[in-house]
Amino acid sequence: MFSPVNPFCLTSTPAWRNAPPLSASHWARGVEVGLRLGPDYVTQRCWLPGLAATRRGLRSAGSMRRVTLFVNGTPKNGKVVAVYGTLSDLLSVASNKLGIKATSVYNGKGGLIDDIALIRDDDVLFVCEGEPFIDPQTDVKFHEELTGSHTDWLTLNVGGRYFTTTRSTLVNKEPDSMLAHMFKDKDAWGNKQDHRGAFLIDRSPEYFEPILNYLRHGQLIVNDGINLLGVLEEARFFGIDSLIEHLEVAIKNSQPAEDHSPISRKEFVRFLLATPTKSELRCQGLNFSGADLSRLDLRYINFKMANLSRCNLAHANLCCANLERADLSGSVLDCANLQGVKMLCSNAEGASLKGCNFEDPSGLKANLEGANLKGVDMEGSQMTGINLRVATLKNAKLKNCNLRGATLAGTDLENCDLSGCDLQEANLRGSNVKGAIFEEMLTPLHMSQSVR
Image (cartoon, rainbow, N blue to C red; front, side):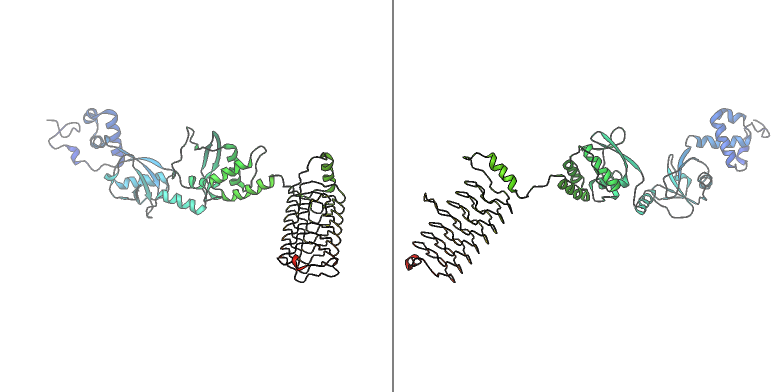
């Protein structure tokens, strides 16, 4: 038996069992010695306090734990520490490392830790100074909502071209757009990233750049050579509503203005000189409003549905011209040659046709069927055999007109002045002659002409 006085000897009652409690520094020194020299060497060579510490250290060396400590409510500036001793020892270390007065510890789910044995290796713990647990993720979201923006930068890979911007740029300007929904909440859409960490977007980069710049500063700036229609389609795809309006206006302004200006006399004369006499000049639907076409040779020209309102056609030759559905309102056609003219459903309201010649010696009759001739002045015109069937001549002046053999069936002659007219063999069946003036008639008007 070894002597109990010798601290290195083993006795029936080991002296280390009666040793006083060890401080944290003795305990740590025992762990260090135990790990460095091994249990056999320590058991035989260490002093009694060191021996006790060594045995305690050996028991815990195989299960030593380390944890990461954060201040309550924040996931930043953490400290990695070793867990030893009691919970009070851990709080003391946390106070020194984090610079706070630690009073309690929580795990990542907000559970209060009141026993050191509950801590596992590589746990993440949050140290409090007495306040309730604050979820760090909730705190970050609250801060973002409070400030109204994200401060983290991100990179977009749009069609192979990289754009670097911030979340606030993509989110704040158009909060209801696709880009805002994609990057408002991190990883909410599971956006795909390339090897550089850039978010992949399969769109055209040249059309995306003006959209990104618009989200940055609110101004639409498009470089030369970029089609605005392409930018518009991208804006519609990403749902940038305010930009869509800007682009539609810009596209409309960039297009050449439609030329509806009337054709002048000088321009029309150039057309006439360039056209052979045997060829028909096609002027259908053209605008001659207010033009001076007086005394011009306009034979056989197609003026169908043309705008000839307020034109000066005095003494013009319109023989066999097609004026079907043309607008002649307010025009002056005094002394014009209208032999064989076609004026079906034309509008000549308020026009002046004094002294016009509608009589063709070859027998070709002028056709004004269904024409609007309200208030026209046709005094002294030659209209033998003219077709005015169902035309409107209300309040018109036809004094001293030659209407021999004219077709006036169904014509509205209300308040029309027919004084001095020659109505021999004219067909007035079904016409409205209410208020019409038949004074100084050259030939008698028979009832057979007006009653079927």
